[in-house]
Image (cartoon, rainbow, N blue to C red; front, side):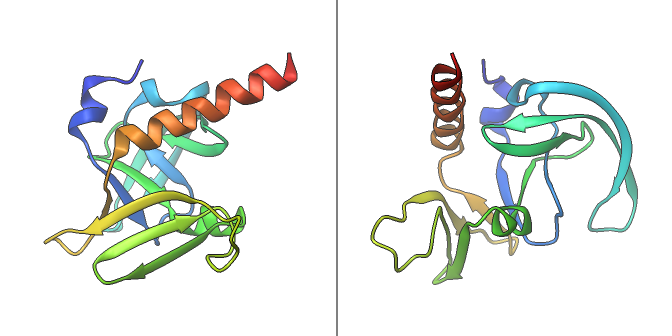
Length: 139
């Protein structure tokens, strides 16, 4: 079940994050203890308490974050394309010019200069559906 804190928190597209991170353990499947530190934008280290997956994406549990950070570079390495422009960000699961490519994330530029996902609940529903479909195929 998605926690109430997730509904209140935003998901930020972060081109500086090397991996997707969230403060919300309820979003992570296959959560395993993992202790490390990551440096955030201000250069200070914060503690990592676990790692697992959101859908097919590797994610770190970082309880002291204020919001979930989607790693743009991580999605790029997975073959996704992320386009920025006209106050929007859109991530595709293939080349944007490929007619079979689909939009997997959309966001808008906010007054603070950061791009936030437009519909985080839709994102979570999509990720959970992928997990269920994968489990059904493996069964």
